[in-house]
Each structure stands twice: as structure tokens, then as C-alpha cells.
Length: 371
Ligand code: ASP
Image (cartoon, rainbow, N blue to C red):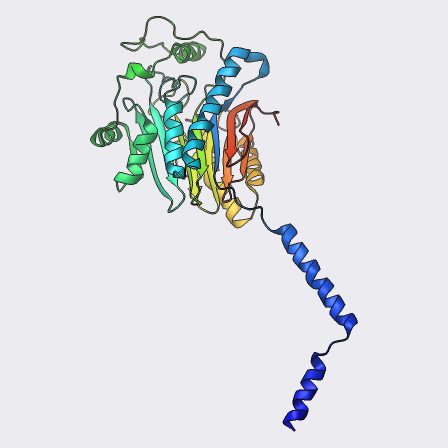
């Protein structure tokens, strides 16, 4: 009886050759399909940088100025890439690149920041670590040389996420961060932009800041970058950790302690391992209202959109949002996905931007139509 049953089972296992061939064909088809839809292998490291968005057009950019911006963006890739390539952390790469850009008068961050209507430089910055979504932000700094390092100190050495004004400065001092005389941030180019803006709006022009250099430091052959020039960096390191950071002087002739999106986590900056990292630049009010950085990450996490799809969608939303004066939002974003794929989007004629991944060639672009 038992023997019979076994024989019976054995018989059932012996399948006709034709049936076996079709099962084999189906299995190889499924395997091929799985390979075709499998995600690209992750990059060992990736880096994407912006230096602000705005009305940056070929006609308004002399070859010399264009070359200055392109080499500053290339320098940012070299600095960040070296850290990531030797296995350094994404937080270290983001801070190092932004510190360098804060020292570069080309950008509206640290030295070279735009002026408030009262003729001051008030600096904002934020940083986020995608490992655990730790974050730090500062707003309204006037003496701290590197606002991004103050933001990092808030993230790593305080129980808080955001500090402003005098208190933020006192905290930075307590952490031995370098302080400078406010005249360190002064550039003639930004002062002239302030005077033009105030004159156009019939507002009084303040005294030149004490200790401001007398001789013009720069001629005004720079593009009307719509007063932007904020800097931002997103990095993925060899351990798979994503970090993002943003630093800015805000917008020219800002008043009343105005703060934009750059130090607002979820608006100007966001990072979440395995999902995304984002840094934004543009008219901050719209970026805060749309919740740009978090919205891009949420679309990628929950709707499984690619970084490019999510960036395009959210920048279109910014452009479709208007304020009480019927102005629409403008600016751009840089994005990394969890595997280090790069995306950027903007609705302005240009955005200084650059990217590189391990073993890949650097990409540096300025104009919106550059491929
Ligand atoms: N988003 C910044 C702000 O509104 C400005 C900029 O990106 O240039 O403060």
C-alpha cells in the first residue's frame, strides 16, 4: 500500500518534456524581467551643490565672471569629493563645502551676503543628518564667520534645533566658533544692490557700515542674480548616510527680522537616509509655504516618484503659488535619492549647480537650458 503511494507520487513528478520546457522558459522570462526592473546599483558616494538661482542669463554674464562661478563650483566638488572619497561622512562634506562657499564673496552666504534695509548682514543656515534626522539651524547671525558650523553645533551639541539672533551668537561663542567684525561680510557689489533696491522702493539709504572697505571691491559686472546666491550641498557617503545643508544672507533689503526658508528644516533643507536629501534656493517665503524640501522627500517615499519627478513637481507648485502682490514663487532645488542619483530643477533662467559621484565625471552648469 505504502509502496504504491510512493510509486504514484514519483509518477506524478515525472512531467512531460514539453511542460518542463515551458516552465523553464517562463522562469527565465521572469528572471530577465526582474533584472530589467532592478534598481541601478547605488553610487559609493555622491555630491550635489548649488550656489543660488535667479535671473542668470548668458547675455548678462561676462566670460570672466562665468569662469569665476564655474571654477568656484568645481572647487566645491573637489573639496567635498575628496572627503567622501576617503570615506569621510556626508555631514563633514556638507559642512566643509559650505564653509568654503561662505568665505567666497561670489555667493550670498557668509562673506558676500546681501544687506538688510538697515545695512546689516544677517545670516541664516541649517544642516540635517539623514541617519536619524538630527538637525540644527541658526537665523540672524551677525558675527559668526561660518553660520553652517553654528548650525552643526546646534545639531550636535545642544538639545535644540533652531536658535536665533543674539542667543544663537552667544551659543556659537560658547562653542568657540570663530567670530568676526561685521565688516568682514561687506562687499561693494552687495552694497550697491542694496542702494538700488532701496532707491527703487523709496526707502532711506542707511550709513555704510563702520569699517566697510573704502575702495570698491568689485565692479558691478555680475548678473542680476535676483539677489540670490544662497549656497547648498547634499551628500551621500560610503556608509549610505545622506546629509544636506543650506546657508544664506537671505534677500536684499529684508526688514523686520525677516527669515527665509534656508534655516527652516523641511522648507530649505531636508535629509532622510534611503529616501532623499534636498537643499533649496529662491524666494524663501514661497518655499516655506509649499514646504518644498519635505514635500519632495514625501513624494519620493510615499509615491515612489524619482528625485527628478518630485523636484519638477514641487518647483512647478512653487511657480504656481502667488503672494498678496500677485508675484509667483521662483527658485530651484538640488536633490539626491537614497542611492545617490542626482536631480535638480528650477523655474529661473539659471542656477549655479554642480554634481559628481564616485568614479564619475564632474558636471558644472549655470543656465537652465544647459544639458
Ligand atoms: N532662499 C533664500 C531666502 O529666501 C534666498 C536665496 O535662496 O537666495 O532667504
